[in-house]
Length: 293
Image (cartoon, rainbow, N blue to C red; front, side, top):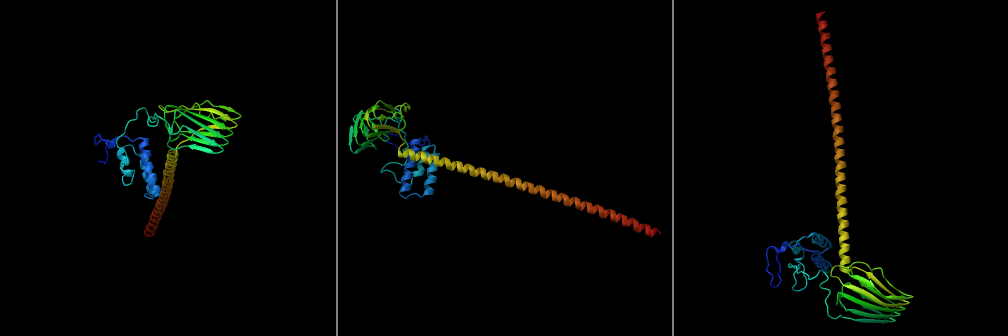
């Protein structure tokens, strides 16, 4: 049985490795493999083989051996063999409640950034004057299911980046400036947060764009690469099949040609033998006539 580390109070049963693995489980194993490649613990060939096995794995039992000989976070198993349910879907762990870790930002002839792992408050205020700011929500948690980002841009700009699954509503006012409405109307995931962008832009602008995280972009890139490899493998198999068919047809034509040549030689030999037999019979008759005389 595959070794597993059961959580406290959870019995370890022989059926655990047969539990179905999800995309998040496969992505966690893929991240361990990327770290091992970067640290030189795996070469590129080993990395590609294990990564392919990771994305093909269907159960925890198939995932566990892939990283068994690789280090992970101290005290953590390579694969969590117990699947803990979320309360209301994948966003439940990111809508935390409470207060935000940052509630305002100012850029005067300068710039500001809010990115990485931070908690968005129910209302975040920012001001940019002859400067710019970036508010990146891709890895952020949210203090409430609905948050408001109030942007004031005077001869400056603010850019709000949201991840897929977040609903966006834009209610800002622009005077010789504008607010980006392109992401409005895109439905969010069940249980996902709603981000309302408000404020005022004068000779400036507030942009809203939707981007994947670095890990998601890497996973998408690897998935496309795997698809290209699969297509290349399919084309190679098709080429081999066609080559085998062509070679088979060539061999069949050669065999037919050899058969025809053998038939022709056999017919020619038969004609020679028949001609020889007639000649022998004629000679025999001639000799008999001479003897009679």
